[in-house]
Amino acid sequence: MRWALVKVCLAVTAMVVIAFAVPLGLVIREMASDRAFSDAERQAGTIAPTLSITTDREELTRAVLSTEPGDRGHLAVHVPPPGKAPAEDAEGAAGGPLDIGTRRATTKDVATVQKDGRASIAEVTGGFALLQPTALSTGEIAVVEVFVPEGEVSNGVATAWLMLAGVGVALIVGSVAVADRLGVRMVQPAQRLAGAAQDLGEGRLGTRVPEEGPTELRSAAVAFNSMADQVVQLLANERELAADLSHRLRTPLTVLRLNAASLGEGPAAEQTRAAVQQLEHEVDTIIRTAREQRPQTQGGQPEAGCDASEVIRERMGFWSALAEDEGREVRLAGVDRTVRIPVARPELAAALDALLGNVFRHTPEGTAFAVDVHHSGDAVIVLVSDAGPGIDDPKAALARGASGRAGSSGSTGLGLDIVRRVAESTGGDLRIGRSVLGGTEVRIWIGLHGNRPERGRRGHGRRVGRRIGRQRREENRAAAGPSH
Image 1 (cartoon, rainbow, N blue to C red):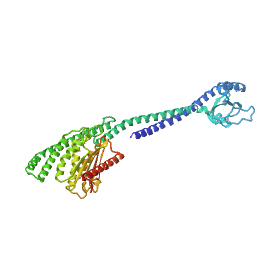
Image 2 (image 1 turned 90 degrees about the vertical axis):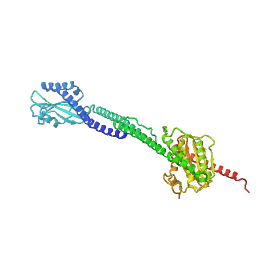
Image 3 (image 1 turned 120 degrees about the horizontal axis):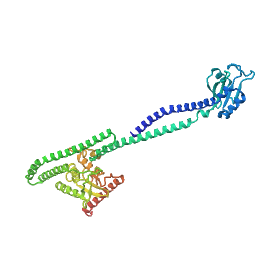
Image 4 (image 1 turned 60 degrees about the horizontal axis):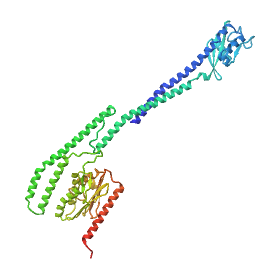
């Protein structure tokens, strides 16, 4: 838009300058020519009084030389012979015509002026000759010739044209500069509006646009800010609705918990009570998350974080009970020290529950699984591995709504999507591969500074996975004892 305004202003100003400068330049040239010939007429008029008194050669010669053009050889006087008509050629008559000064005009041009009695301008070598008729006392017509050099006819024209060109260029440059400044005033608010729209699309709900610039852009900024406020309000209403709906589930959950308590002892009863407890916990988590107003930083990441080790230990404590009932071997490593991550506690717990729930849902009973945590300085890597059949198509599994494993049924793939969003909210990512246990390995890369992992750092993550695999194999050999 800015360059378009500059081009339009450049074209318009150039047309205006040309439309005025070209005719003005022609007028200046005509004025210089008129000035030169007016001076020549004035100089020719200085010799007229002498011609009206006498036609003596000596007297006329002294009069011609006393003038400034005559002294320079630019003035001549042509007197016809006495008793001859003006149109006749009296060159051979007695007395002949009288020519005083330097003659440049042709005889024909002089005779034409004597016959017509009107002044005339004839082109001669080096300039022009002004032929001015003057009446003598005898009634005959003499012609005063004044030579006007070509330089005097165009004197000052080149300078005037240069000045006009300079003024035209200055007008064009000034108009371009003004158009550029006006373009900046229009483009900058538009760029701020586009940047704010992009920030809002990336989840920065606190983004607003200053109401500056032209009237149209100010109106657009007001509309954008109103839309952003409405989006925030809609999200708040959605959270409230989720909290209210989740709260309504507490009553039937209480009935289920009481009924589960009356089932007595046994694996089925314990599993039912554990499932009811987990359901209650999930409902409470939904309510807390929906009610929670998490402030956003400028980068769009939540300001609040949590201790990843503590959350993983807590969730593994819950799932270990169910794993024990199903005869699954569980391993947990890397949670012996505090690891702060920029993820809210409910979100990390929901991501871990989604992954561990997939292990229980898509692997047979008795399948071992493990959770390993590694701190690499600028990121935290969480590996969830199992010894199940694995995932045939990891790319399809990462697509929202796809099945978690080829051939499985009843899976929506939303669990992996939850985990992926948690990782990407910190600048990290989610990857699925083959674990050292023989099944699936899900690697969660959680960035600590909001930066996406570089390729080299991703290779570092694979090296971490291989090192953890070697540690597991060494632990398995140590547990098996010496070979026989």
